[in-house]
Image (cartoon, rainbow, N blue to C red; front, top):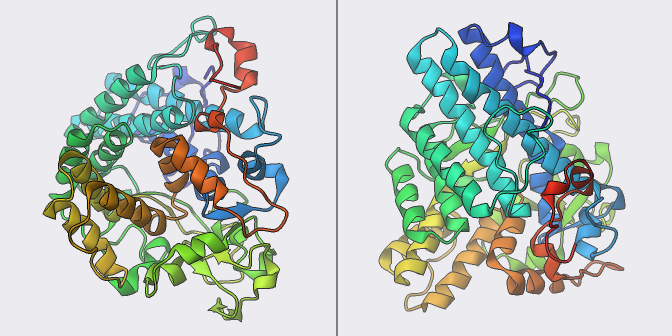
Length: 470
């Protein structure tokens, strides 16, 4: 939170160097480089390069076999506290992104440049700041709201209430939708669009049970021309062959692979266990998740690799992983691609928007035709029959939760869904995991909120009180 190094980088690359702020923020090129530096934070391990996919291993979709990365500790309820690595690193990376976004928002208005471009860049920064704060509120609830440059003394602030932070998130997103374009040219692929801002706004409202507002924002996305891909293209949506070019993609974190530079490409191949060249991987689908798919659901084979199936020209052997399965959603079928892949992370896509419509409509008005139509579009694409007519509101609610779990698996949704559903859902999910030998999930109510990192409290005692039971 205290220091910003302005990244000099293309949108798809990490910052390669830094220069002092007094020499920066003078030209339109500086403005572009500055906002590119905000995007770069999304591609970090503690964001979309690893954490968002791996978070399904904290929930009931997968198992993380290594203790050094803390997913296993969180799921087993041991060795995870305010001093652990993940609460600290995700907090730090989120605020790194926020501070970089603040620098853009505060400095770009004074640059003599094209006004349309200026407003667009500020809108991109506000979208990204909203995204970082949204993740923070989901994990920690009350966090410091920082929207201005600070001295060291000024940075020692208390936590603001989640409600106050949410107000800022929505203010940023409303500002973004008014200035962001609907589409970009090829050279600007990957930047936040108006559709991305509306889709994120819909998600924010849904997570906070503002169902009318969630429905309104999702309806705005439907007016922008997005549509579901065909059944045969589902798996390719997460691979370089279709990313950023499909009718379903709304916003993706960009990764630049095949460069030979470590940490620039995505790590989805090396962590999945599907590609033998990189060993067993670090997280794997579990039997309970595989069994959760309905018969004939095409998403099963597009998400999970099972014993005897071919991938990358090699027959997969289930004995290579501790659960007998491997993740293949977003995994490039090439055994030479390990930690330097160019598959993007799909953050927002139209299928999620349809599920938001279904959930918000059901919560507002019960099982209406609108709710049925939205969820059935996704089921049809998956090769399944429509939901049976005559479901109660609670039965449709359960069906929508089921659909979110299988449709959005390993896309950074399911763990956060369980957190927002509440203790009973999280407890049931954790206790359902029985298939992994010598592994027992332990539920504790305190897991609904992550602890504020102790290292941050040591620097700034005003962050106290700690979250409950930590």
